Image (tube, rainbow, N blue to C red):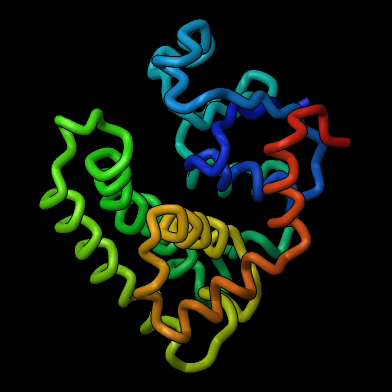
Length: 211
């Protein structure tokens, strides 16, 4: 059975959501955040101390967007992936990685310097600067949705939407969603209304094996 080490609403939510969308069995290990500090025995599983960690047989992976693509291809075929012979294949790969590298990264600095650091180490200017950075990068999502499309690639929900959707979930946690454009707000409503998204959120409260 696939195993996923996860912290609630952290980056590991991407593969958790992907597993729910695929409907494959998995075992969820729920950890306190940050696990390298609050559950040091986790370092025996992942010396980096980061989440996610996905184990699928001999395969061990720690990058959330890469895990989504891996799951789509290893446990497909599925319309959640975009194939090389489809028109949006390049866009699919770009969005898959943009969700993490471009949209989530600046938010991690907002999270750290606005919420996680001790009061005396917080840096409001840094947090505000990176919040603006995130919002400026979010314009690319707005542009992609400007023609009225419901999803980012091939007119269907894919792993690219999971990758970008997690960045929007994190933005809500950081209270940055008040600056979403109408198109992005509507896009987020579509994503968060999905049954499997809700199932993934529920799984965080009940980390038992999922049949």
